[in-house]
Length: 103
Image (cartoon, rainbow, N blue to C red):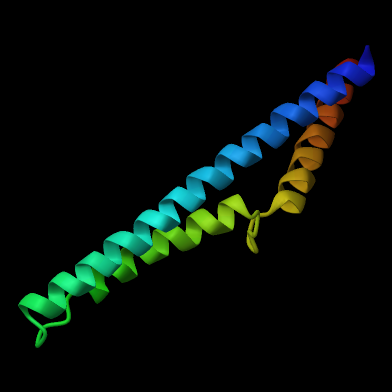
């Protein structure tokens, strides 16, 4: 029974990861196609003003953060940080409950 639950939980987690990856690759594909189109449009209409770099840069920042989330690269507040904070809050709650019981 317990094994079935764990297997089902792992399946749900794997399915969620696949959906995240599909979303990221869709975003990346759109980014590439649209920015190639903008570059062509810009170079054909006004090559003296290279404005296509601005949307490429802005959207690129979004794609970068999306990649960091999907591939779980969070140098500031990663999974280890979350787990430490959860343990810290649980320990503080346990101590607070013990102090109320002793009174």
